[in-house]
Image 1 (spheres, helix red, strand yellow):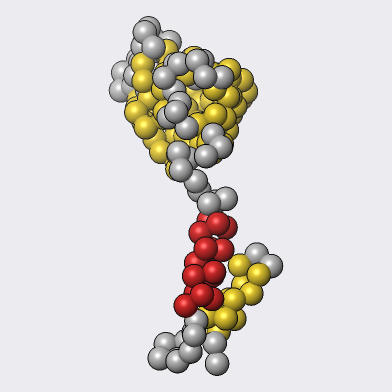
Image 2 (cartoon, rainbow, N blue to C red):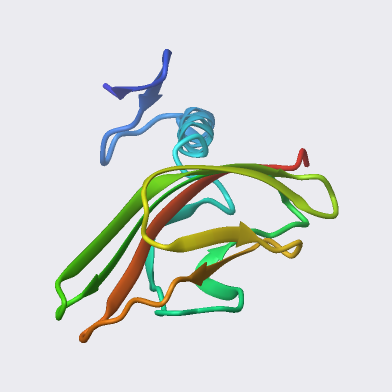
Length: 158
């Protein structure tokens, strides 16, 4: 007797170990349904939760490693981020979190950034899809700066 597996609202008869029968088509249909369902969870070009260092006093646009988009495929982005910057003496803790939404028109990115807090950072995206930043200069010892980010994308129609 096969095991009934449900993906969304579809049910599939999946064979148990050692069970005889003609289940090849049913197994393929199940695998296809699972693959389709998983593509809504994470698809090509999404960025899972990642982190990078934020330099102090970066006056020229500095790339954030791992925070870029393939402009030959990605047409729209929805990103979340949190930036923390601290010094020990004097004790300073700056935090900023927010969202970047945007789309690529074939030559440049149109973006909106909404955030709460002020970490002294300006974010942007180059025409090549690289997220970059500039940062204010914090005085104090033992500076640390980091950004945690993730992104969901819409890829161009294939």
